[in-house]
Image: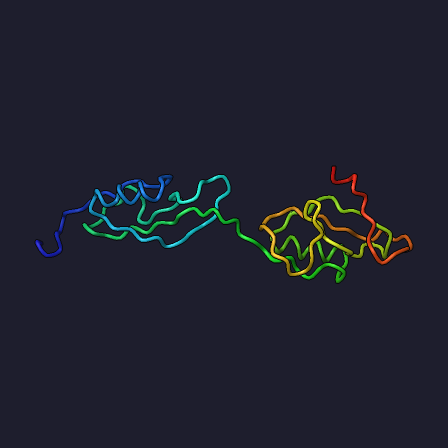
Length: 162
């Protein structure tokens, strides 16, 4: 009994929502150690806050036990734009973009082959295949209207972005 300290347990404090430094103090005050096992971006949560802990708060553990912490990150994860620009139809591009986690805004039509994807926009920026942009971004497809194409360059009405 004295070797395993049978019956002697410490309730784990709730450190979720605390800054990492404050959580470390709270755990050390209970004679518990901690380990950062992951960083995750959570929109609206300040960086360096505890967002998950294992074992959970109020669980009984032995003296010196390591508590695993997941900490919030300030880095927005990015996603690569799939190869849809000048390489696919509207339907195919929409499916591939949604599968990659992007949201779709209202498409812009230009003169050109019906439903062919000529470019992709993020705000006022024209994207290229393979570019990394924030995951979950809303992108706009610039597609052909089916009218004859007069030039090689897409014509975009800039007043749409205002």
